[in-house]
Length: 219
Image (tube, rainbow, N blue to C red; front, side, top):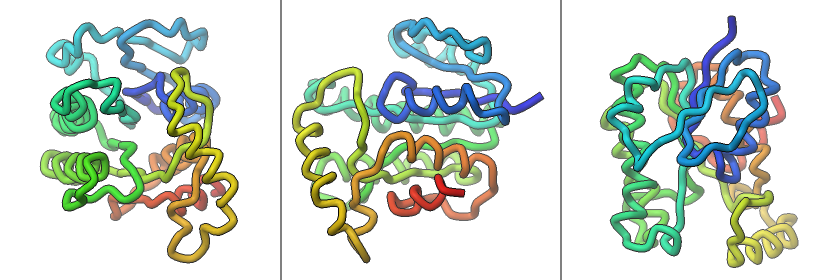
């Protein structure tokens, strides 16, 4: 028997790529996916659990796994009020950290962002940095944060500013050398692969920058 993976944020850019890779990853015999709407998965490895209005109390009872992947993320435009944005990008990872510790889940792997810093004046980067520190307060062992730069790939929903950014980053990618390497745009498939590679090992570090994800994915 292989391991059990649990995935939150499975319909996003990284999350959907991660699920596709986990299906073909022989290290896992079961993938438990928590979605708000059914995605009609065909793989027999997948068990889909539908969240109703973020009903975390009941979800906690069903959340058991070896590796817990958190790929959740929203935008201020989609969330509306700032409090709604923080409820997703901070509230869910922190709840997962508490639940992982309570339920004995060994590893928690979370998507963050390049430049995440609680002291940043940029709302997005401040929020990601705050999330990282808040998670570590509840679970300090087996927690790993992945800080990708601009993600490359096809989203289910259009984000026009991001699409423009992708084009610009692809054109200027050759300039991202030295200290700028971590800002080079990165495919979601590479991030997903790196997350699985980290899940296989025991690392003492918590943070993986975007340029490190490329190297991990090659192993």
